[in-house]
Image 1: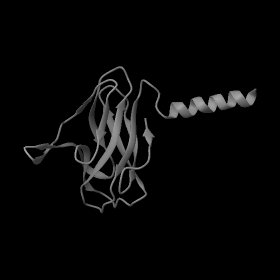
Image 2 (image 1 turned 30 degrees about the horizontal axis):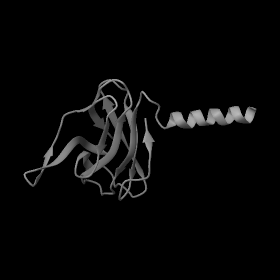
Image 3 (image 1 turned 90 degrees about the vertical axis):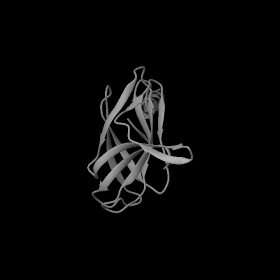
Image 4 (image 1 turned 45 degrees about the vertical axis):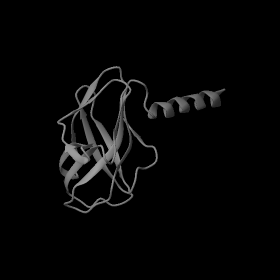
Length: 148
């Protein structure tokens, strides 16, 4: 009987670590390797599991001088780049930051980004507490990862 209760508690803990309904969740955060002084894009998926619309109002990291939200899109067969000052995230919405679309641009990297290592990215929201994202340095999107 104790074993069954222990297994149930472990299962509840593991499920809560994957993002319970009513929270903001980040998946698959990654950035390509680069050298100091360069500019590089960070990609991830952001899910709003809450019942409240929110807004990503800024980002920060100790590895870059400036971080900007960029939106790439095709207009009249020409790739255009916009820089929204914030990003609305509706309740229940998933927002994908991916090559050729939304991304975080890290300007003037302060250190070499080495394949296989990680950097931190802080997401600041209008209504939700900040989320510290563990961003994997990889050549392509990593396997499923979650940050809350």
